[in-house]
Amino acid sequence: MAATRLDKFLQLSRLVKRRTLAKELADAGRVLLNEKTAKASADVRVGDRIQVRIGNWQVKATVLTVPGAGKVARGAPLVEISERSQRQSADE
Image 1 (tube, one colour):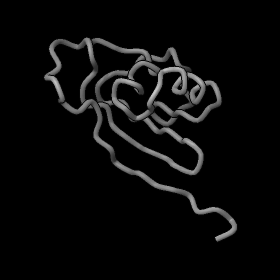
Image 2 (cartoon, rainbow, N blue to C red):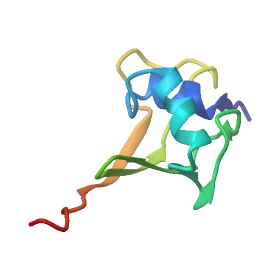
Image 3 (tube, rainbow, N blue to C red):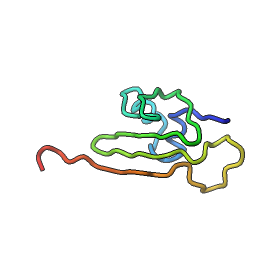
Image 4 (cartoon, rainbow, N blue to C red):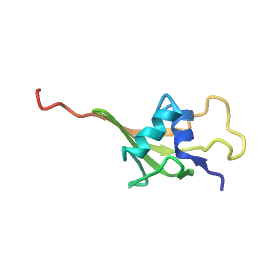
């Protein structure tokens, strides 16, 4: 089964704009892979669950396709977003 680095996958799936940002988020413990803190070099496989926290925003997604795992149709979704949320600040 093919796998891709977490930081690269986050960029390709557009959950994060830049690979360097994905690496920084993982290094800071803001990325969970299958409910465990993950390093940027962790392998992502089909069926994995990813959670990314950026500031007050949080996104949870399930991996549908991994680039490099055979042919991926152009424009085919790599993830299915299961939850998007924004935490409210204490001032509100």
